[in-house]
Image (tube, rainbow, N blue to C red; front, side, top):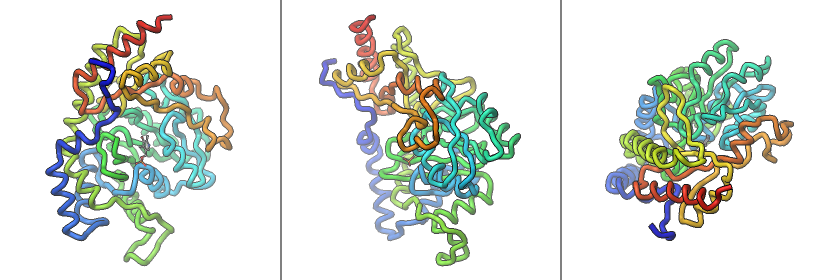
Length: 375
Ligand SMILES: *Cc1c(COP(=O)(O)O)cnc(C)c1O
């Protein structure tokens, strides 16, 4: 393959093309119906995604970020409260805690899975701790059973940020089977992506479901213009829900393709210096990202870019060192595993639409980089 070959990090056009007739028809039905907000598609999708993820109730909201914020708000988390979470994640995970006036308390990651180091959580608990907010990073679930035991022992909430992990399993259970709430994102590049923003809160507790439902529509109850609490304007719209309902039946097949792609990378990269992603025992990974570590990460990324391969760094700066969260008072060195990961991780294209030739080309270029940069 020559150097003009382009390997994109995602290929949303290809996915649309494969389902075009069905998606176009579903969108057209919504347009003709005249019902654009909180209609039948949203209701069905809520049931379908809840059932798929192992929860009783689903509440469609405007984004994954809102799914997290409405979860925290529904559980009454606010000023004076502490929420234990990880510094190695997308900014939204911390942002929602801060927006509600609560304080994020970070725990370092397990350097093998990039998920929260559950053995360090007990040491971070104080009388003000109200919730755990772990992230299922890159498509692999954080250890639910241990997290649930901790939540029970300290009588605090477990809120899962599963924005990257729809379809993942642990001990045969899906993302929303354990916990008080689970937040998913339908951002276009997620494993199940809409054609715009969207998200959902999942829970098996009816009282929590009721509160989230109330919050997403201005806090109204017993009629649209009777407000119980100050709420949000955060709804999933019918067009997005209709598109997601066409895509959901294909999700398992797409996730299986991601795993096949990952296996092909494993076969071709095992002899390189790249540290390959680990799957903890009894987990089914969904490879939202195929994230390797490399000591010469930046040079490797530039090299791949020059050879037409798009890659991404998730995430280049841990949240405890971000300007936005400087007032939390953390310092470099506080979370060494997160800080080191931020310097070494590189996510390679792994989306379901990749061809075997593209994967082989990426792997060959990683090898070629190492041959040319032997130290
Ligand atoms: C994508 C993502 C979110 C936020 O989802 P949006 O739909 O973009 O608001 C939250 N947490 C994690 C870990 C994510 O990857």
